[in-house]
Image 1: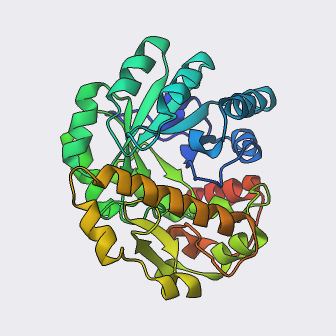
Image 2 (image 1 turned 180 degrees about the horizontal axis):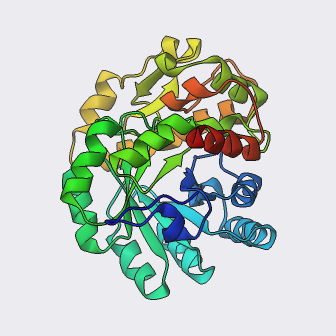
Length: 323
């Protein structure tokens, strides 16, 4: 299923895939089996480098994916100073000849400069026109338009506004991120001017995901109205399911945390500590049965009605798209 227009190529053309879909990188959730099945299903998967504790584990995962699939492999890099592993992760991506990198939460300049000579494509998360034009000038290959319906770190603008704004301001391809869980919504994003989509939350409720069954079932049981923004996980607003535990602890930083986060000298360290604490909470809830349930997800869980294999999620999406 190739979609293209006279202005920009389809994501299918850019990455050499059958369907214009990226299985979005999901912290703690994305794994090798999911990426392998994504490739076999005609789409591509992107995995966060931070999902691996060591460089050896990261390398082994990429080598396993490559040995068991033929499609392009993507890696998500957090490119701000909070990621102390960034330089080594980028070096490893280049050595392993990763097909594309999605940059998040920082300047992609160093990544673009390092990847261009190696033929590695760089896609950059953006939430507005200003930043999109900046990364376009830096030479990125496409922009990931993170809209208001995205899971994790969402943007402030709905897709039906953000994509046309970016389309008007930028010449490079636009990949829409957020708010898609069925074929009709995929068709809407393409019609708005996106060359493809990045979709994450529906893939949490798949048999290949190795998160807890409780987490998967929550993706089925909860809906868009149950998604809230919390400041307690990463230092930046992040979408989670509004479980009883989240309601109990609240979604806002306390007075001291808010005060320290505004201090120029301390805010970087406060953000790092918040991220470490939030990561611990996410990891605990993702893989264990616990009352302290902090599950990251986006509004697109609205369209998830059962736990399915990755292949079935893709097949149903494409069948709906073609109707």
